[in-house]
Image 1 (tube, rainbow, N blue to C red):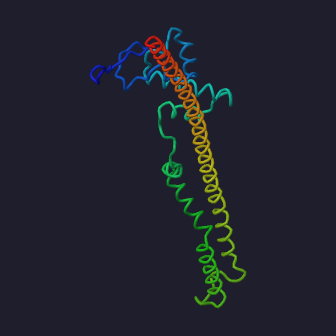
Image 2 (image 1 turned 45 degrees about the horizontal axis):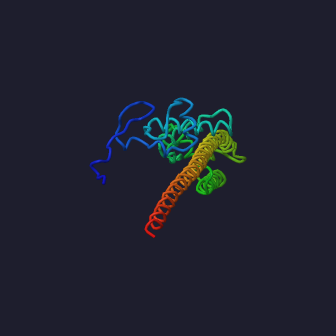
Length: 240
């Protein structure tokens, strides 16, 4: 009867030939068929009775995912390559795009965003209406003696034109950055959805592989049970 002391603590990778701890190895019979096909292309003498290192297995997983994407999309883009890399390295792809984008803004871009936010608020509208009313009242009723901008308020029109001329490009810059943020958010959502789809597909393949293995083992157990029953029947017939 075998004990824990009799169990091997290390194994040999059939691809690299290195002896590694078992926690860094995968039994060859547990590798899925699509990966086995890729491994056999590079190592024809590879069999299902040994081990393969997790590092080498991740390389073939990456190659398999890339082949799936190339079949569906053709040439891989930078976004799709990042998805493949995150799957092979078991890394998280989710991140806060808002925080990442805000950290890259310059001082001038932050100021223009603040101006655009203020220019599109009720605070700006009410404060500007109060400024216009105060300007007109001062110049109409001559609160300061001689009006500095008599009707029809030419100086006020010049100020309004200058504000409009400066405010328009500031708002456009802010809108362009909003479009850039929307584009980054859309790209990130695409990467997340693509990674989820690929991992679900791999999960289905793993489950199918495990079911096939389990069915094969159950068949072997059934064959052994039938053989034992036949031996018991033969022994009973002899005793009779």
